[in-house]
Image (cartoon, rainbow, N blue to C red; front, side, top):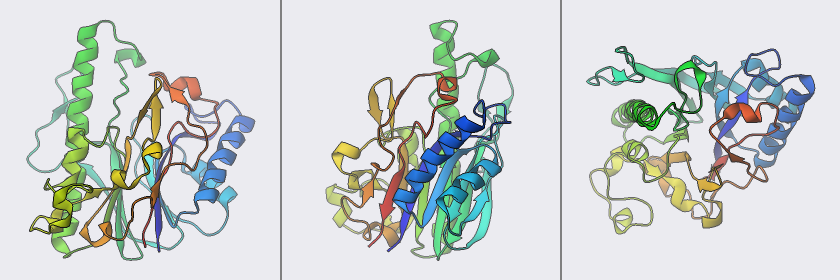
Length: 309
């Protein structure tokens, strides 16, 4: 039995960082809250998003206690990155950054300069023979020129929402290509793709990660093996109890935007109800301004955890 979780821990910076809490007391409150949740979950493997300073993650895991093996990816322009922490050693660690071959540079703002790589590199590691690939795709929460969180007009909002969708789609395609490489190289490899995908189960970018359609959990095709199974990734959202099927609350609306997808080798090992999100207590409702929670303990996301049989 293996437990694997993903959690966006919301701007985990030390107090001396530009995006960190105002002081040591505020940081300690956040770190204590995160550590308490991780301790309660007790995952064997934990994928993390929005790690600012690696020292801040070390502090949190130190509060949890025990031995942790940790790898982090390179940060984005804001200084946040993804990480993988596990109770056993990690091997075959590498980042996934440049967009997959064939994609042209993606427009991400009003300038003529296109982007050719993920804003935040994804991170791969093998843990106890299982391939773990975590990512944090481009957010739907928009930032406008000058660091504004509100558009000047509706045309600007529409443009920047489109740019964000372009980028999120290119990033999803790039992560999918990395998973395809693993699945092609090793027949029936145990693969887990997980993280903050920043969109819902039925969104095009989330669906893109799954590969060949038609065999989703809960559909008639799930029990009918076919040639696409070796390339598929199954989203475990359907295994989450309905009352827990959300990982963030945005303006009062529950959304499941943090996901765990697994390959054919693992999907039958995870039963209904073995995927949960109820480990961190009450979930706050957020707005479009992330700075409002700078000194708030815990995270604005719920962790998602799956347990194999």
